[in-house]
Amino acid sequence: MNLPDLLLLVESAKYLISQIEKHPGYQALDYHPDLTIGDARTALSYLKCELEDNQQPSIVFESVD
Image: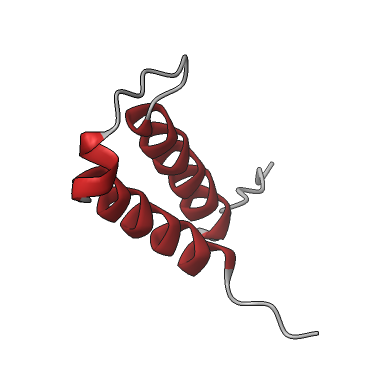
């Protein structure tokens, strides 16, 4: 099974959350959960940072004695 890139999925989820937040149907709800759309957005931003950090090549320095 071919899975899409995880970073692409995170970006897609962030976009979808922003669309949900703007949707008149969502805005019309009297909905106040413990965890909010903003919490979800923040969690995805942290996940994106973690993924980007892990994709950067690590530099290993060898000591020359």
